[in-house]
Amino acid sequence: MRSDRSDESDRSAPRRRLRAAGGYRALASFQTTTLIYDATYFFCEKFLSAARTRTVDQMVQAARSGRQNIAEGSRCAASSSHTELRLVNVARASLEELLLDYEDYLRHRRLPLWVPDSPEAGAVRAIAARPHRKDRSDPSDLTDLSDQARWALYAPWLEHDDPAVRANATLCLIHQANYLLDQQIIALERAFIEDGGYSEQLAAERIAERERKRRDPSDPTDPTDPSQKIPHCPQCGAAMALRTAKNGPHPGSQFWGCTAYPTCKGRTPL
Image 1 (cartoon, rainbow, N blue to C red):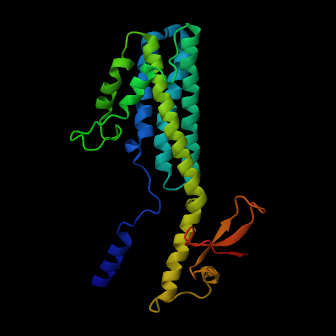
Image 2: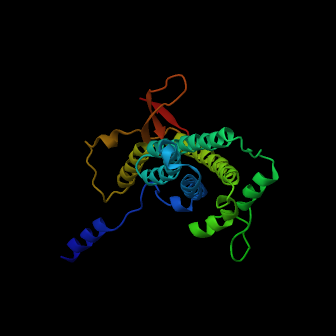
Image 3: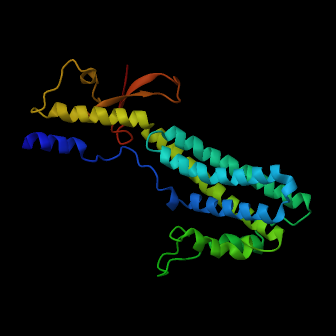
C-alpha cells in the first residue's frame, strides 16, 4: 500500500514545464502598449465626435490589439513558438496602423507633428529612462510601477487640453513600443531558429528521457520501441532528434540533428 501511494504521489507531482509562458505584465512592451491603449481611449472620447464612430472604433481596436496580442502570444509560448511569434507580429502591425491614424489626425487638422529630435519629443522619451525605483539604486525603466503610477508620469502630456500634445505624446509611445516589439520579434526568431519549435523540443525531451532509461540497467526498455532506433551523434554521442531543414540547399528535407544543439552541431542524414 505504501509503495502504491508513493508511486501515485510521484505521478501527480508537478513537473517542470518544457517552455515558459506568461509573465507578460513585466514586459516593457506590454506596459507601454497599456499606456497607448488608455491614452487612445481617452483621446477618442474627448476629441473625436460621436458621428465618426468608425474612426474611433478603428483606433481603439488597433490600440487594444497591440496590447492584447502581446498577452495572448505570451500565454501561447508554452505550446507554440510559431503562434507566439505570429501574435507579436500582429501587435506590431496594429500599432503601425494606429500610428498612421494619429499622424492623419494631425495632418488633416494642420496641427504640428513633433520631429524626433524636438525638445517636446525628447521630454516624453526621457520618462522611460529615468530611475523610478524607491531606492534609486537601479536606473531602469518603468517595469516595477503600477499602471496608475506609470500613467501619472505621462499625465502632463496624455491629459493635456491640447489634442496636438496628446496625439504627439502618444506617437512617441507608439515609436517606443514598436522598437521594443521589433527587438522582441528578433529574439523570438533567433530562439526559434536555434532551439526549434515546441514539437521539436518535446521530441528532444522524449529522446533524452529514453536515453536516460537506456543507460539505467535497472529500467527495462522495450527493444521494439521505435525510439530505440534513434541514432547517436557522431560528434558527442548524445541522442539525435528528427529535424526539418528551414533553409540551405534542401529546405523541407529531414535529417537527424544533435539534441545538444547549439553546443554541438552534429547531424546525420536519414
